[in-house]
Length: 436
Image (cartoon, rainbow, N blue to C red):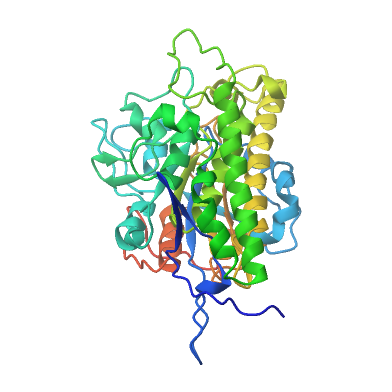
């Protein structure tokens, strides 16, 4: 058994350097040492990972309920983690409503349970209900990340913010999605001000500015804590290096109707999503925030996937009309998305925290506000819930709920597990049962 840490650290402890502040991961030294004191538990984190344009539900939904179910085709990329997530069937979002529309209203109602209006009004989202109560406990109240919008968008006559926004602080205050990995990195590790570009380019690494403090701390903590610090700082350096490499590469040629983005982003979907996923893991690992929304892409996405050999655009393929060749193409996209989610779960599970892993202390919802994208169906949504919520969830099952059970009932249950019990959210009828 390793000796206890000689240092006693606050959960808010950080390493500081010139223009940089790096939060620390969960360490033994942050556990109370008073005689008889209960060990401090890691906090519970909550994230919503969104994929657009619906899912081919017959390739997604397990035939059997309970634990003894066979993974359908679209869940095969997640086979390694089947004990770490549950498939939740029968959940529904609001449809159409008085203002009509498909993609934009679906996206707007996903975390709010409120039907958006054509003037852009929506409702408060689940993550922001939590942020209002627990956001003060972390450096960032919440984090909103996602990939860059591409091509033309299907906004259904609504403000296009609706198709690219999951987080709403109020009915009239959408929170913008940060699509630049560099900007996310600076928010996590910068000093909160816009960095001077020349100085940033001249500096070899943010880690170089906190090296002395890191070395000093490593000499005061246990062997396990030293190992965690080394692993964590290596992860930070790896992400920083990948951002710098992406910025040195020539930018991809933009479509004719799209101006060049401000930052140089990874060309392909997988490297882009994985870089953002690594940043989300670092944000949770350091307790920089406990709340995150992550758009794999905007609703109505017309992204192309030439790297998969896919001919056609995502949204167009979602309206396949049952044509076998188009279904085959969109299944490639949806498997590819699930593969990136598996990458995120793997990264979360690799981080040791307390008596378990970071994934054990998370609740990660993965899904979409459309079921069958071909029909714009909102009645049976593709929803996965990963993690154990600090021991409050029992994953590894397929749970089927009665048809048209409000999706917002699930969000109520997650809010309760973050310490933010909420009586009502949009069209909710009460917390979802059967998760534990």
